[in-house]
Length: 139
Image 1 (cartoon, helix red, strand yellow):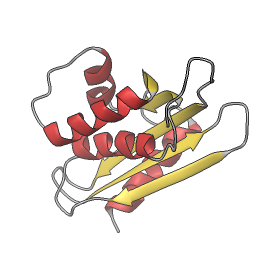
Image 2: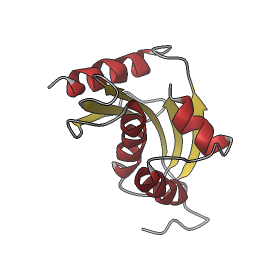
Image 3: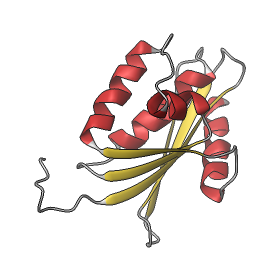
Image 4: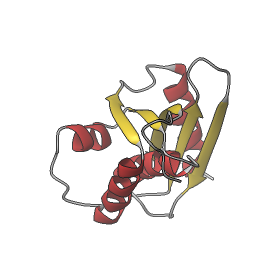
């Protein structure tokens, strides 16, 4: 779907987190999508490969959150991962996980994304994503 200049993009907040039980080890991710000013929310989560890394799970959480959007949106994406947020905002060098960075870059072009770093568990939304991603990593 193409959004014209006269159309307004929906506004969505995404809080996301990834976890790994051991690094490397089994991993999980979670993303909470909310519409500001409403009670509408959707939690998505998943388990990854049995041997993965925390950084891959942090990237996966952001990717899956953006993939869950059905049309271009104005997104504020919150994460406690400096790896994800600062790579997207401060152009940190991408030494690993090229497949996931490529996917995240493609999704970031579809949406208007503002990347916000927050301290670990500093909001109820991030704390819930942390809890669920850890739960997914131990399934």
